[in-house]
Structures are given as C-alpha cells and as structure tokens.
Image (cartoon, rainbow over the protein chains, first blue to last red):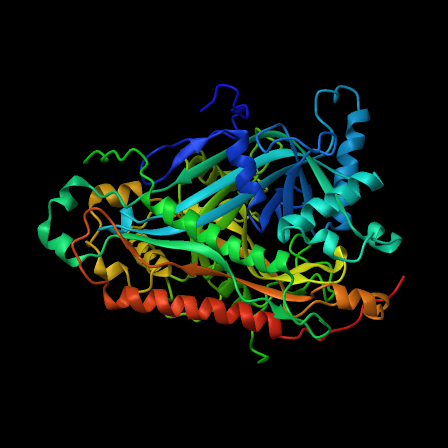
Length: 282
Length: 282
C-alpha cells in the first residue's frame, strides 16, 4: 500500500468494530470505498426525518466524481452524485438544512442534509461445517455526508453523462442529446460532500473450528467450500420501437466484458486468502 | 387480486409518492413485500443514533417468519428476523428502547429500536432514446419496524435454521448440529415487529417521449431495449478441507434451479408490460 493512499477519518459513527475471519476486514481507504460505490448498481440512501422514528430509505443510482476536477483519480477526494426519485420532501429537507446555517451558533455544522449511503456486493456463499461458520464473501461500503441539490445546469449535464455511462459504458453519446429544457427541469441530482466512510470485506474459503475439523465423520459428510455469486447481464432484448438489427459494438462489448469481470471477481474472492487464523475454542 | 390479500397501512413515512412508467408502480401488499425481502441476499438496515446526525447503516441477512405460527403463509402477518454482526451498541440501543417504555407517557410507543430495512433487486437495464428515459427494471421494498434481540433459545435455534436454509435450500440439516453453547451465545438475532412497509416495482420495455419516437433518424441510430440483469451462482468451489468428491444433490439442484429462476425473472420483467402510457409532452 503506497503511503500516499488516502484514508477517511475514523469517526465514532463510521468505525468498523470487529475483525475476524468470518466477519471480514475493515478499511477506510478512499480508493476501495469509492470503487465499491461506483460498481454497485443500487445504493441505499438513508436519512432521518423529524416526523417519524424511522429513517427514510431510498434506492438510488450514484457515482463518485468531482465536477471541479473531472480528471480526478478514483482514490482522490470526491463527491457522491446521486440520481433517482428525489421527492419534493427530500428537496425541501436539503434546503431547510442549508437555511439552518443562518441560525446563530450553527456555523460549525456543514450545510446540506445528513445522509448515509450503503453499497453492498455479494461475491459468494461460504459453506462451512456448522451453521455458525457459514458466511458470505462480500464487499460492503458506507458513506456519510451532506446532500444538496445540484442547481448549476453545467454540473447537472456533467452528472447526467457520468451516471448514464456508469450504467452502460459509453452509452451517453449514443443517445439523443442534449437533454431539452423539460428534461433538465425534471432531473434532480444530489451532490453529497463526504464526511466519513468505511468498508468491510470478506473473502476466501470457509474457516471452521478446530474441534469440527478433527471430526473425520463430519468431514466425510458435509460439503464445504464457496459458491461464487455475481451479477450476469443477459442477452440484450430489443424493445418494440428498436430499429437496429444488430447490437452496437459498444453495447455488445460492454455486456461481454461486464460478465467476464463479474465472474472473475467472484472466483477470485473465493480463492483469495485472508490470512486464515483459527478461531479460539470456547 | 383476491380480496383477502393483506396490505400494510399507508403511513406518512411509508407512502410511495409517484407512479409513472419510468419510475415504477407502488404496492403495499404483504405478500409482494415479504417475497422481495426473503429473496434479497443482503438487506440494508438503518436506524438513528443520538450521537450523530447520520443514520447507522448495516448490511444484514434476513427472513420473514413467525415463530408462534411457523406454518404461516408468506402473505400473512410476519416478523422479520435479522442476522449479522450485531454490535454491542446495537444491542444496548434495542435494550434502551425497551426500557424507555417505563417512562411516563411512553406507553403508546412500541418497545424495541425503530429500524428501517431496504431490499432492492435489479432486473434489467432499460435503454431508451434519451438519457432521461433510461431506467432500471427493479423491485425494491422497505419495511419499518421495532427490533428486539431474540433471547429465547428455542426461537434462536428456529431462526438459525430459517436463515441458513434461506441462503442454501435444505443446507441446515446437512451440517453439524445442534449448535453448541458457545455458538448459541455468539449468535445474535434481531426480531423486528413490522409497523409498515411498501414496495416499488418497474418492469417492461423503455418508454420514450412522442417527439423522440417520431424522429426516424434517431430511431435508426439508437439501440433501445432491455439488458436483463440477474444473480448467477457459479460452479461450487470445494474448500481446502472438503472431502466430498461429488457435489451433494441438494446443492447441485439448488445452484441449477436458482440460476434458472433468476434468469427467468429478469427476462419476464423485461417483457411484462406495465400498462404503457405515453408521457405528456412539455
């Protein structure tokens, strides 16, 4: 790990508490966390509301990026851009949060609505000798930050391209551009300034207790190992008004390469050892 | 839809606000919501904390069930059982929430920690003529309820079987049983009494604006349709201490049938029309 690799600060609310072979390894590296967010097709976005004890939770699409420095590396300080159904309530809440800065004594609280964003990937089913030692291979990240509505037209356009191309590589320039006024108006983008983040990753084969590993009859009876899990993109299905008889090259390549990559990640996660250490017997 | 189909009450915090062809259709049916939760490999669990403006978010495994009525149907009133890393903080919070019931005037507030649980599935990439009409086919549910730690040993055992078999059908009885004392102690299960829930589902082909559909040159240039998306279980990879030379039948069947089902759902989502209605031109 190069010394210049950036880490998110460890805050009480972002600290990952436990490390063992079954539960996974914690990291605060921006690069790792940003990559997990960028490759997660659905992010869960959560924020508190005053009129309910339950946080709101919304599925959204998101990408890390920097409008000010578009050529930033994935491991740099970036903002999270979120796209999805932004309710009028959410818009109002993020405006109210901004206004609260006018209140006396509130100058240390950053503007924007405090939100938490979860990005979880499953890479495999880890099948062990006992139910308790079963696990997933997974990669899960969480980001904490302050969300504001993007109002600048140029930044909005830039984000629409960023997010469209995150769904299908190189898709944006192959569509009808630019978005018209109605489309610009109806699109709401949230920009999240990140305060902290963390990730937890579990990879490798099962790890059972010593007493079970010494039980020959048990070993003869129970299959142990990993069932890799990954997303697959199926054969593209032309819609009712599609006129193209063959699939465009960028789309064909994207589907094929996405599938190769996804399978590779799941298989690699199964074989990548995590410094196996036997758990203590009780 | 049979008249006896149960629906969750529509609360201000659970109401789904918008319906259009791109954004999806709302439902409050217990059966639909419970099925989405049960088939989601990672749930996101969120709850407020007093010492931070950001809700906590944790990935967990969960299943709907009823310990009192184990033969309940998926569309019945059920509780959500959650398994995962339950921090001492979470345990303390759910205990404190219980105690708060002793406070005067708090008798109407249910005991347990108020939590929100998100379960999202992606079924396809919906590629339209314009970036704005792009969408996902998806099925996303959210449940709101009060979480308490399961302390009864029998209920805990029952939940361990329920959750293990939700990961791999019929796996539990093929492992070393019963869990020993240390395993029982180290396993924390949350039981969530559900207060409300909702789901949003989008299926079908793209739906573009009339003006774009009349643009022949655009139609000749842009591929439109759906790329199905689904999870795949790869070939099981035996671990370092596996002794079984062939894969057990229950596991082989599970992998094959899961893959058939997952692919079928994604393809069906692409073809299942949602009462297409053209959006209004601006």
